[in-house]
Amino acid sequence: MAESSDPQRLLREFQKCNEFFVGIDSDGCAFDTMEVKHKECFIPNIIRYYNLAAVSKYAREAAEFINLYSQWRGINRFPALIMSFDLLIERPEVLRRHHPIPALTGLRRWVERETKLSNPTLQAEVEATGNADLVQALEWSEAVNRTIGEVVHHVPPFSFVRESLESMQGRAYVMVVSTTPGEALDREWQEHGLKPFVGLIVGQELGSKREHLALGAVGRYEPHKILIVGDAPGDLQAAESNGILFYPIDPGFEDESWQRFFEEGLPRFLSENYAGAYMTAQIARFKRLLPDTPPWQGRRVSGPGRIGESEKRSAMIEKRPTIDGKGGGTRALRCFSRAGDAEKRPSQCSSVRAGQGQDPPWLVARSAFPNHLRAVAESQRVGSARPTRGGRRRPCRSESLDLPGRSKCHALGSSRSRWSLPGATRDAVCGAAQVPRCISL
Image (cartoon, rainbow, N blue to C red):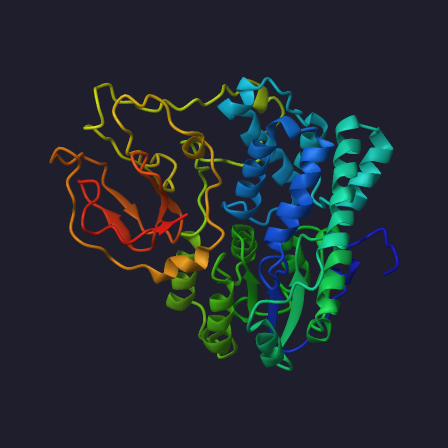
């Protein structure tokens, strides 16, 4: 594509085709590429280019949470980098190592004022200012792209993606709407023979997803005939800001989501019967999957910190209760679950032997979510409540644990760490009858 002073010209000049419009995200939505790109390409280069080997474990956890397992899944790489560093600098484990974490001041200023967060616009800013933070961010971002080009190949689309695209031919204009660089998008859709099924492939160089939809679809199609298919809350926000429809691809349940789209969602959309109760139910299920609170801290993440905020923050060293006493007769239970709202903290009740005095490392800092989220669908309920040692039951805060695969129970008195499964509810007594069977890690 020839260079233009207006990279969004293709969207501005787009002419309506077909009766309906469908925008589809790529990474983690059409293709199972989110995990490999972040874990093998983005994060190793963060550690390398920002000299974080001394705290690599915590840097990895922070970046995985922001990019894969939180409400910020799928956001642009540059705000995600800032948010990952904001989480990292607050970890007590990192503070105890006295390892310097870059403030990224120059990058923060650029992200605050720029709407097209891409390598070309960053390159122009580097040439104009020579800012050291921007130079480093550009080197990191270019290294990420090189690594993706070397590593990410032959990753097929999810089941029912091809069938859905075929079903839309002649009925709906399909546009790839993504914050991934355009070159990678074009290569991946071409590699798997899906490019003929779509019209435009639009990446980060043309702005945000909200802008893609506003320029390419809104005003040309009726709002109830525009649908975006995505796997991240940012896709939902892009739809809501433009007053159009949204179909979620549930993280961890992508194949099932595409099958549901092919068999139910798409026919409803094309018959103008998608909006309303059906879409509301899809979105409600989707929202329950991604938390806003990391497992190692008790407050929600709000977004990329502005200039100076990271310096003002004090480390959140969570007080972890211990029980004084003799022997192993007394236990307390700590269970980590997603905070339901801004005021509600995760429940904390854990099985700690009396006098143990300190939580083991795997409880204090461990990635929040399992790699096998699909396994949580196989939950089974178990028998009646069992009293704690000594015949007494320990009180536990009443808490709903109905997020699939997202609530983590640790029995420190035993050798296992477990994930509670969907549909779990916890009564006023820990270990009550309504807790389903857990998957041992």
